[in-house]
Length: 395
Image (tube, helix red, strand yellow):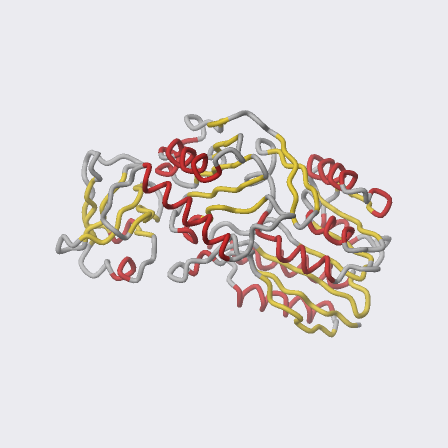
């Protein structure tokens, strides 16, 4: 099937010439009447010069997500090459180690496929769709994963119901494309985690924090640690694995806390760990809660759109004021934001405001970001969503 043609307004081809992978609806001169969401389209300039091929999706500001800047057929071979290229990139980074069998294989625009996430959990792959075009290509993507991993992946699970636009929530179902294994156990730097690909948040785990978890671990020996918004205990387990004296973990989800407790037991650290199902802000407000050598604050995205950014910034500030007050003299705060609309400078400025209000002496030890298996396309700076700071805190 030949792609439809979408023509841009005069002068609107510049972003594609600069290899940015989004075409905004306001840049389009004309759309074919027969075009439906998920269709492949060739994007043409005002003078009919070919620019890119992508998936069309109406109803939002991004009308086309570009999957190729070369004129070619989007077939099984295309997807085989995308998966193989992504795998080679991670191999070249020496990211696939003997004690780690979980990583992100495809990270949307960072791997040249906007709308597609693929996470590998030992013998299970999860495809998560953020565009209907990718969802329609899921069988070919699944086949490409099976070809790349041969016999090491026995289950491929498709998710998209929570990440596609609302109009698809009743028509798109999450499903097993290959196999039917719902739970698996992964190893990340020798630490074991139970993963449930159906009930877990995102695709089952937060793989983007791997390098930052390792960093926390390196500073945790003989330390007391508080992990806020702990989910299934990633930072907590790294701290325990590296010799923390004790770790307290807090999350508002009882389901997450239960799974974290399982992970703690799985790794043999139950006697040094306490899990709390609680609202983090209320927990940090509690005068009975002691100070810790290390405090980690890794909240969910407080803002998913620009018009919610101001409220998000205020929430980040309040949270970090409370967190800083729970850090012992000469201790550390690891603080993060995964809100894409809160940029690096704005996040930094927010932490500055929190530091002033908390009345502490604070030094920046490191700026932190997402792991290398969540690459940022040089031409798509919006892909840099995870911001973090490691702070040294004195009274």
